[in-house]
Image (tube, rainbow, N blue to C red):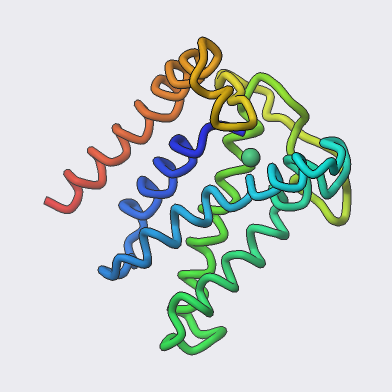
Length: 176
Ligand SMILES: [Zn+2]
């Protein structure tokens, strides 16, 4: 994983860039939830599911299919007043799907662990992007507070923090 902070920052940035965002607080909470939810597989990783299995870490919960399913469930349950399959609903589905998929994309830019099973459950191959500048984050909170964690923070500041800050600045200027 990249750290949950980096994933959350991407969610907030995407929300600020999304032209149809709603003013309600749950829009933001749900965006952050979507961006971090794929790492729920760390739970069954600890319970012994092998990393390399489709159900393992960076497996099915990091796939595009899971992102789409999450986008649909979140749009349906988070915004029940919207009519399902209408344009406004699809817009939110697209947004929450992209935010969820951003998680796998960020993980595929890290320099360690196994790749991301983007096409699970149809294909269990693991993929990385050709460019992997982000230092991989340790699994677990305690391991994060270490020299390794500090290297993660530094690389994420550069490769996630700065691009997000620039995009936020752009969104802010556009609105002015
Ligand atoms: Zn992950």
